[in-house]
Image (cartoon, helix red, strand yellow):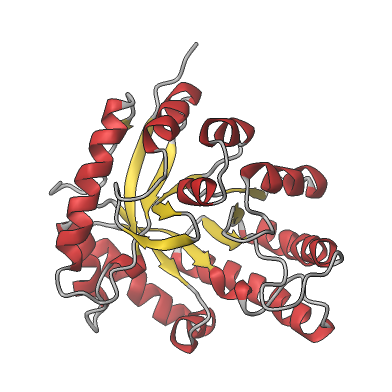
Length: 290
């Protein structure tokens, strides 16, 4: 029996303007028509400090999202591009493992089920054939803690030459063999490295927890407006509909604190919604005003 594909649609934190208050920040997502927001823990000191938020701080953020009728869908743990799980340096790898664990704690305290982990082995180091093995070793050590907390780690296929394809990520899943390790594919990154969108999404069938939606150009994996790049969204959504994919899809934009960020996000949502509906996928909204 075939399953109808049903998704909820969200937005990346960096697509919105930081207002100085979580209530007004989340209100932007609601006004732009999104059901959830994915937050970021990146290389910046400000966002990395979120790994040390207290229980009380997490509850403040969680309650602000609730008041504005949006969900915190996931945490994007891109700080590992700097603190490298596959580093040749033992101290850096130990710090990367601690970041995995703190990321899991942050998800747990925010009530978030999904921690997106980057597929970079050792981004700022020279190429080293041992980097992949060290990356897997660090990741394996993080998974028991994630399991204890009930948080799924989901690998994103990234720009570059490490885990750049969904097939690469599936190789990792097959080697590590844990139900707490899954996929968070990025449709744009498939196109940026010249991959076959349909074949890669087929490779990830039944292991994809959520989907990143962004546009790209060759060599430009960020800041390309939806519809102005080479990402094959019709093929992607048609394949996801064929699979009966049900889950979350997040539009990934960087609006660089633009005052009209909410309007830009709404325009992107309308474009993406048409493509999703054309593919036969149903969008389920958790936003009562939408």
